[in-house]
Amino acid sequence: MFLAILGRNTELCFAFLLELHKIQIAMQRILAVLLFALLVGQSACLIKPEDEIPDPWKLAFEDATITPIRNMHASPTEFYVITDDEFIRLDNNNNIIERRKLTLPFRFFGRPQLSDNVFTRVTRQGQSDQIIEFHLAKIPGQVYNYSFEQLEAETGDQLFPETSGRYTAAFNDVGTQMLLPASNSSKDIYTLLLFDIELNSNNSEILNVSLRANIDVTDLQNDPNSISNTRFVDGHYYVTSLNGAFRVGPDGSVTKIFQQWMLDFFSYEDSLFVTSSAAQLFTSSDSGLSWREWDEENRTELQFVEVANNNVFSQPFTGFPFQMADEDLLSTRKVRLNQDFVDDVSAYNNIRFFFDKYYLANQKELYFTDDIKLEE
Image 1 (cartoon, one colour):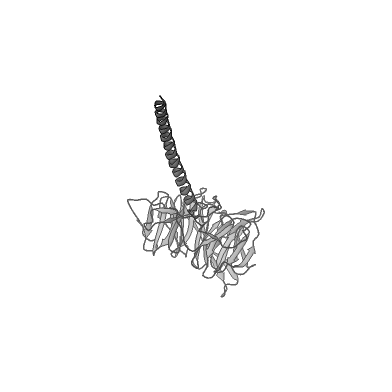
Image 2: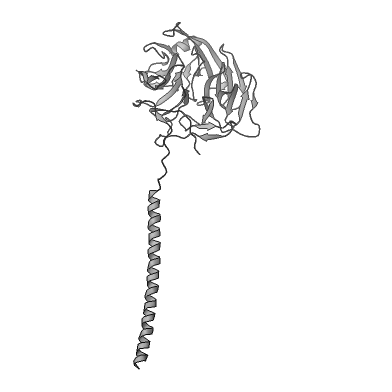
């Protein structure tokens, strides 16, 4: 009987020890899993996170302008920036040469236009007549005013400054002539005003501004917002509108070259191009005398165009972010901007290239970059 009880207890002890061994193995496995998870977690913490992509645009100068930047221009030696109440000149290292205060007018008509030696504003001070202000770029205080009252006396028509369009006037390449479209309520059409600008030999004084021609364009109806843009490209002025496109010579001759709604002219690789509201792109190799469609099968994404450093940039309207055209001039890719850039109608007016740097305005600040980055 004793042996029976002993044998039974031995069997129970063996079973107990076996279960205890199983529990020990299970605990070892759990500890091993926990240890592995801990090691993996530690190694993951040691992996360096990806660096944030740096902003591609750098601030050109610290003090922001009081009002948004309206226009920019790259002269051979200086870079110009203009707002409603300020004109700024920079050297090729972004050092400020001059920061000139301008009288803030009662009203603006279009945005200021810039050339190497002269810039213009079309304004009204208080309730007085509209005035075209011709300013010397490098000599403060040298201003020649040409009033619309004087224009009406010379032409015999009631004229009003153009306010629509990407650019509401255009200088020739050397800044000695300017074309300004004006609403002619006497004839219910647009009249193109062509001015000659006479400077002294060292460009330090405006000697005279005279009206070379007032060109009545009977095919350009006096409808609000009908003019899309005014440009000077490859020796001629071009005006695009809902009523077609017009080629204007420096002598005042005018030819209608398109019947449909056109948007913008630009020069690229020794050819002229013009964009249209129907997403068609036309080109000319004879200075705008004849035109053919660039690609008859495919439409283009180009609309309003700026060319900087032989790169073609486009935007649907002033203030929208720029896109850069591919080599086919049909497709575009969005230019990468800084994360804190403001997007509104005063954000992006144009893009310029000056001494190996691209310049872009965002509201009241000027930025530059050595290399254009595109969104993936």
